[in-house]
Length: 400
Ligand code: ATP
Ligand code: CA
Ligand code: CA
Image (cartoon, rainbow, N blue to C red; front, side):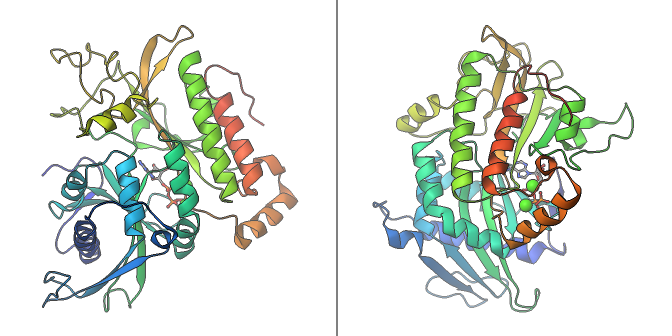
């Protein structure tokens, strides 16, 4: 099996047992949670389910190669969230646990979290810190209501929150993890990638030479300014985009988080794809009501009409999910341009905690306040919003 990104985890890999247990736990927990959906109540936002796995198996669990304990948090809420995000339950299970293959991206951030892709690259499993886990549980109701009122939210789509505990291998350490959407399409090259926070303090990725392959780097705020890049949206998409951003940032302020970023992947239609991908569409909604929902999604508005047929000659013009969840850039007349954006707000479980308060204090002694990364949620949100808005369609920015 070809692995596009990361390292395939197979037996013998140091994290194989953990990955295997994560997937086994998800498979059993998710398939158990399949009765008739009822209206959620307050209890659902607190409930947890524990499963114990071992060689012998039990009434609730099949026999497993390894001994471990699995905890599923608020299963009914996440089931409802997956439904709202248009995931088919059977698809979800097959994608994540159909074959025990994950690829590990290692730990791309500074936090020490590990990232795993599902076999088909649609989903990402991220191990999270205990404080992030607590934060997600605390805000789950607000998040749920937000998604309900904002079906097109740009905030990470959370599909599950789980924990594994293995007796020997990790010193009985509990590992929390989330399942979320991979913002980037499995079947399309991302030519340029930005992680934007609205902070300029240390927010640069060193580019070693002119010839360096930029697609392998994640560029940051200062790179964005220096390269004079922008998100090119004509009036129609810009207004949809801003409205959604404002609503999302309002929630992020309310739940008191900061340190999140806009992850922006740019596919250049003219460059097309290097790799020869067989399949274009990754997502095929099953029911007609989901079709209606998806039609209102600004990410997919173009899907039906402006798929770049020149890039995929011979393909019928109508391809569902034409951009695999991306948004096509447009000019001032709302006509399509050559870039497709894959974007979303990621890493939004960092509470403005004591630690961050300290960081703000120390840094504010030596640095201009508006350039520091750790700010209270309100200030962080305002600065974030301003940076992204200024960076959308040709507003000239100064580096401060
Ligand atoms: P830190 O706290 O140091 O920023 P982290 O471990 O919390 O790091 P994230 O900021 O969540 O990590 O993500 C690190 C990188 O992983 C991102 O810059 C991006 O390249 C990739 N990544 C994270 N989430 C997604 C996603 N949903 N889709 C695609 N790529 C992602
Ligand atoms: Ca981050
Ligand atoms: Ca983080």
